[in-house]
Image 1 (cartoon, rainbow, N blue to C red):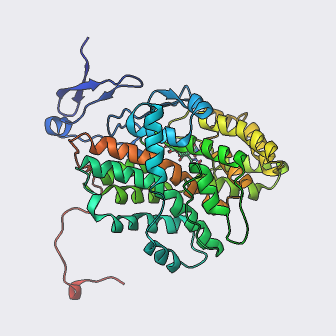
Image 2 (cartoon, helix red, strand yellow):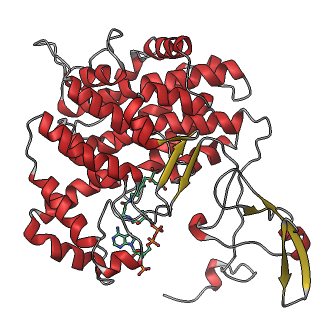
Image 3 (tube, rainbow, N blue to C red):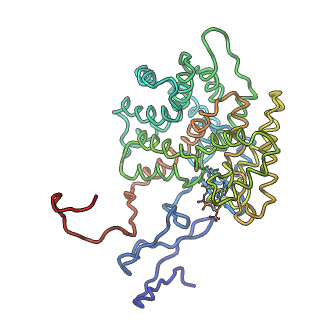
Length: 432
Ligand code: SDX
């Protein structure tokens, strides 16, 4: 059996064979690299619904079966047994660390958590009500100004130290964005705390009194970070790879990823979900919200519902959904928005509109309820997503830039503009 497809242009009768590339799991792809040269044709796939941009060994998603693997390990098992720092190591290095490797990696991350004091001058330049994502997009990229000596994508030592610095410093920047927004002093990272406890301390401790991290909150945060750490070639990861393909330094690539994540169709959805649940208010308004989501004349969408790849339950949503109950009970919190979310899910999943379109709750549908229980303000939700996804972004950047054959990403287009025409002098132009 030939491992290829034959493409025939019926307008000209010309044909060509294109090889089929198969990976270990998932659908194979047609290598169309020579299509334009042989048939003078492009492929056209807005939103890249059926387009693979690269080969990758980091994450596998089966959208129909609701499967998510990080380096082959099921997300359910990592959620139950691992930690975010260990998952970051796994995504970057390809295997779970030995005890010695884990200690070394955790030591390196812990000892790179401080940021240059000058960065506070940048932070203080923001207006007090600046959106934390606006601050993150600006301040993350400016980290590159402090590491001129170690940003060469072709230098393996530079690649690894920058990966460590980003995983270590993004939480410090994120917490600083929050502190700036509430007018409180920045809190230095405490190296005797674990990754998530350190972040919560930087977020919520104040000089005026001792602060004790709630271990339930730290554990919940660690689980949310594991679930958000990577997700194959999503929009922000594809952005990181495209920017990386130009040879831009890794910090610039991560800053681009943060910007891409901000959109409400992507990482900004978690903030949009909380706003939507608050707007719905209580269970009695759920049917009206579902009706609005189905109304083509209403641009209202059920935020946190639907996914380009998952046409079944997002496995991360399932885990977070179960976590909601556990964390709220353990923290002794009753949040009526959880009931609104559950009622919304219940009504939507029985509605033909959602069933036909295979629209299920995604990772963003329930995460905000837990962030809210941890007293993280809604404007910080996407910052939390960016903090966790930095591990995946840098893993993809390392996979791309460690391969030795980075090809600049340069898609083509179908031109639908004006035909070639001659310039008309201003004095000779008519019209209003
Ligand atoms: C993330 O890619 C990733 O992996 C992303 C992510 C990650 O970890 O990186 O998983 C994180 O971004 C999750 C998605 C968060 N976004 C939202 O929750 C926003 C709400 N959802 C959508 O806008 C939408 O579902 C997308 C953007 C997530 C997916 O869009 P697609 O695949 O382009 O699907 P589509 O917009 O073409 O919708 C198909 C149909 C349309 O109806 P018809 O035109 O066929 O009649 O479904 C409808 C849409 O109108 N639809 C919805 C809907 N989502 C899709 N209708 C109501 N509410 C929704 N949420």
